[in-house]
Image (cartoon, rainbow, N blue to C red; front, side, top):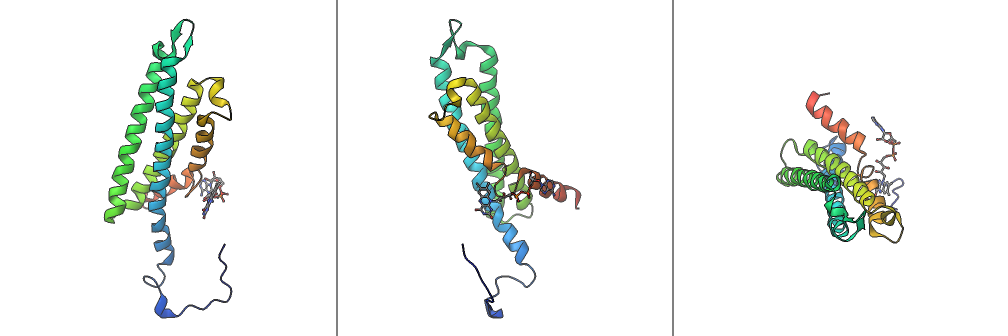
Length: 171
Ligand SMILES: Cc1cc2nc3c(=O)[nH]c(=O)nc-3n(C[C@H](O)[C@H](O)[C@H](O)COP(=O)(O)OP(=O)(O)OC[C@H]3O[C@@H](n4cnc5c(N)ncnc54)[C@H](O)[C@@H]3O)c2cc1C
């Protein structure tokens, strides 16, 4: 923790234009939002990979989990949703890196989609592990707690919707 009390900073040390400090600080969050989105996608991919392995091993009612079509379709949806979130994150990263006009909106959209998708996929993967996935010594239980906070950190996903809707509506 760093505290500044009665700290006078010479005008010559001003970073950027006067009155623009909040805007500059907020723009710094764009990159952080990409980081958080990437953490969610990475955590979800880790869980999906392990879930696919588990579904090939675990047998119930005489069949592998991987042989139940209802569960096959869930894996298909998780892989598709993750790929879509990953693509938007890449698009936002390009925009932030290039300083594009809509970069803040794209970073907020990517953070919102990546962290909501990440949580949904990890939660679904835990479900596909049954009670085993809920145990504390299983990695999916830890990743679930990790990705849950990504919907809150670096600006909540409600605040992401504020940023996006303001950019769309000009409010
Ligand atoms: C593990 C962890 C680590 C953190 N690390 C850091 C850090 O390193 N640096 C840092 O600065 N902060 C950090 N934070 C703080 C984090 O950024 C805040 O918790 C987050 O921005 C939400 O603020 P809040 O907790 O005050 O919630 P509040 O602002 O009180 O929000 C409560 C709820 O109301 C919703 N809400 C609030 N305003 C609106 C609105 N206008 N419209 C719609 N919904 C709204 C929110 O989305 C949320 O769901 C961390 C938090 C956690 C949990």
